[in-house]
Image (tube, helix red, strand yellow):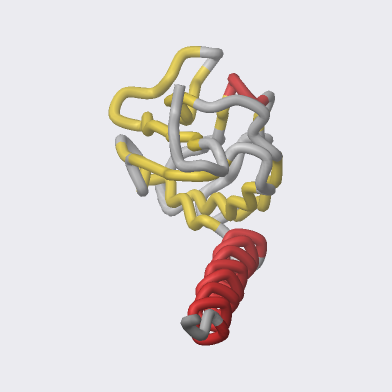
Length: 129
C-alpha cells in the first residue's frame, strides 16, 4: 500500500498558495493608488485606463492647461465641475458594466479636440464584453 500523505500535503499546499494569491490580488485592486489624469490644452493623459468591474475607481484629475477643462465619463455618470488652470478634483465611482468607454473634457457638451481617452473595464475574471 502506498503512502498518500505527501500527495495530500502537496494538494493542501497548492490550495493554500492559490488562496493567498487570490487574496493578494484582491488586496492590490482594493488598495491601488488613485489614477492620475492630467488635462492639458489639446491633450489628456493617460489615453487609456484599465479598471475592474465592481471595484471602486478613484481618479485624481488635474488641469495642467492654461484654459478651463473638465473630466467626463458619461457611461458612468461622472461629470466634474469646470477646473481652472492648476485646479485638481478627485472623483470615485464603481463601474457596473464591462467594455470600452470614452472619457474626455468637453466644451458646451462637445468633446474637445485631442482630449479623449478610453477606459477599459474588465470583469473580475479578466474578460471584457
